[in-house]
Length: 192
Image (cartoon, rainbow, N blue to C red):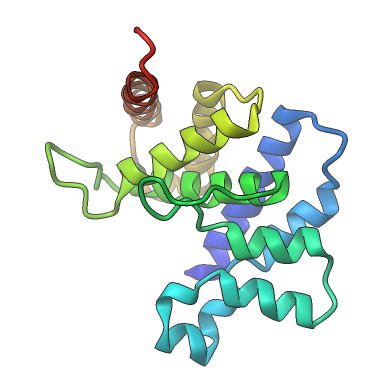
């Protein structure tokens, strides 16, 4: 459910904060943004206009007196939504976006619904491309392979009833990431 998804997003945001080690980021504000990242999904306007997800959440939070860091992070955490879309404009939004996208990717891989061939019904390639673009643009010193391994191990401990091979899932996700990174570098005209 959404509450459990938010718990996982908070966990990932905290892990990224620990990896990035950027003293300009206030952990409490980051975790508060993660906590409220999906609150707007229960609003009538988002039900009517799903493209306003995040945007309305940020507006609601700003209207309720939350800080600009929190409000803007929530507004931008779906960025980039498509190829050549805007990236989050702040480190808070960047970490929250990475956290949300990673939560989706890891969860889908764990339940065995990974992309195959040209089929990618959950847009995992697009999400991973967005993560790579954000890391690249934000110049985060983030070891994606180590983070993925830590997250898959966390999922394994939390959802051991799913009985999945966490080593294989980790390896597959790291390889999936490696392929997307190579593709990103090729797009930038770098050699392998």
